[in-house]
Length: 280
Image: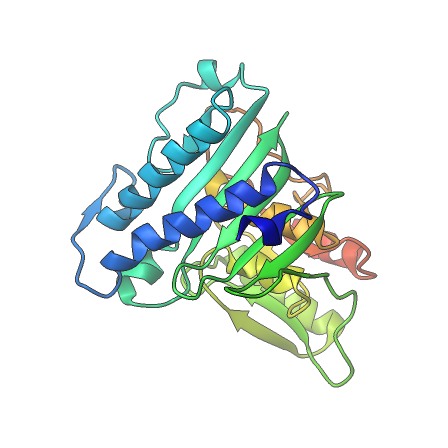
């Protein structure tokens, strides 16, 4: 497998892809077997699968780059005073979409991102049930790979294909009044919307491979939910913005919760309209 990935432009991309796939293999024995679920302090669920993937990733990243610290959802109690001194770090969700995993859905992922000075260098998103993966970073490009096949470059679409509706990605489980108002405004401006409901960080990946047009998120997320897939989207010609229109970043602040954001093609003609609706 390593030889297939030799053409990736960043030297850490290929080994991180392999590590994400290995973490997915650690998850699968727990899938659809009534795995025990416990609640963390914020009431979010955690399973033995989350922890198995976490241990695989932590060991792998430490062996790969011993000087780069790791911030994982399953080991996030690192003081802000410590994180503030980091220049580069890994931002990891060992199992993104734990609720999807628990329900028996295939829509859960492994997310690994390399962050430098608060910006995503590149990210890897893998799907344990299929072995599919996405990898990309701003200025580096983006690819989708499947088992036994050479990874293929992917790119956002600036407009829907002829005959296709404008497609907005939404969460199966999370919305908000602000988000519903934004969707109504988009429909008024762009016509009837097609809604694509999908779990985990795959929302960004739909945009990155040109299967959807926009992903507004005016509801809570955490840093590890978004960073890896943001890298993929940015590599594919997309962007992620905060509601002021600034690039979305990951500062070492006290809270690891994200601000609201908008994910879209970087050259979208409707960019300013989307920002105005999001601020309304």
